[in-house]
Image (cartoon, rainbow, N blue to C red; front, side, top):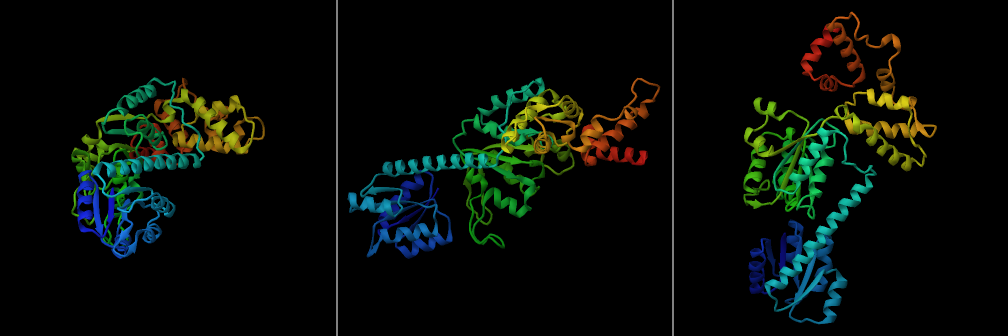
Length: 447
């Protein structure tokens, strides 16, 4: 943490700084209230140690000013004039603890340990509140598919180790959910789970979000930030869509993984962070390495434990259970008593390709619950594309086993998949071919 020592005695500031820096913290001193307030304005501090007697100034009068400038600041008061009255007054004014002079390094260590424990609990509470406020159904990590069960077994085994984990899979397959589950079953579970979405920002802003920056490091850097790596120290850093990480940032991430070291943007000071990295991508990183878009050494450093989450179309045995889980959640949310799906709706859902995977299934079920007029979701409550493609009229069913050539069967299948999906990329994924190949076949068919 970054700590501010506010005391009018230079010797006290120096000895306190030595003790705190020996514990791994960063310190800055201030001899009076004006200097302390300037430091608070210029930079972020986690904790301030405040003397109640500041050469004519009152620490109790300075305390609310410090908190006004930084409401998240934890202030620990210390003084040679210790009394119960002073302690009560300081706590009422917003201090979190009170130490009598002379004090020992162990007393400071214990006070900081309490602050750290409280902050961790507050962080976990905020995370739980955030997850509850998203109003999402609970995730069931049991499965009827052997391939998926194997993925979960490896994930739980790896969770208890410090190994870096790579989660592969199409968009919407539950990579973020699995990453969080790994964290919650790891030795780091008491600490933060911090997510960085790699495609969401420009190169400059992404680097700042990851590693932090100092004030004035670039245009618009009006205040300093610590970055997600610092927030995840002692916990898990989840790098979502790592395949979109710019090449310029990749060496810095490699350094963090190998040396546990990094530097904030605009700062030469080397910092350390013990973070467990879990990465996820829907891209082919081996191909990206061959094309020079992803560093080979970083790829191998990330790919210690590789987990591939199958798309929903490859785990249809799980579809009824997942769909019914969503159904119960959204039925309760909408105040409806919907008990299940009609056989026609179940057949349509089993026959659909689900290019959007679990995310699409969630949206389809939510929509169906809203539209359903009875106590079951019927075929008419599902999207039109599922009605058309999964239950074609008898005249349009693919006449397999007849005298049709293999090329004709393939062409008809191509037409069905293209009609069923929203983009050529989704269709190519379902067909298991390259998008360029699909484009050529589509052009040949005149579609």
